[in-house]
Length: 79
Figure 1 (cartoon, rainbow, N blue to C red):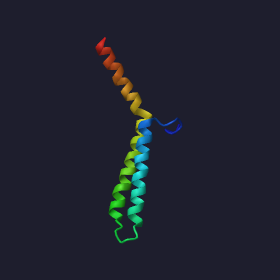
Figure 2: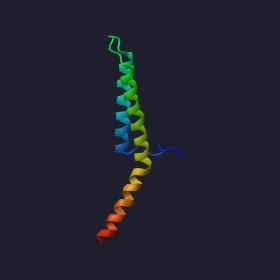
Figure 3: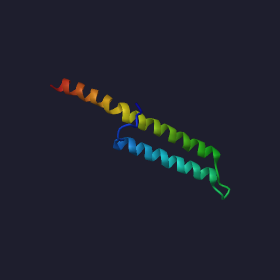
Figure 4: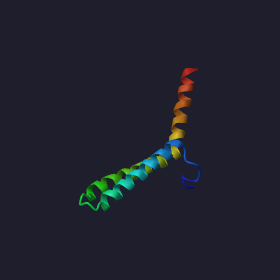
């Protein structure tokens, strides 16, 4: 199953939104007509976009489960 089969939670949506902003900024850096284009900067920002998209996928699929296990362990220690 795809990690995007279910609705994205707020954290995953925020990460995807940030990834898309970085891609738009990278595209702007590549296409700057005023002579201030920066392929190196665009590459750098695009790398952040990939990283954030990966984090969104992980957050959606595993983060809630991992936190759930930690919460259960803390609950057992407290009782």
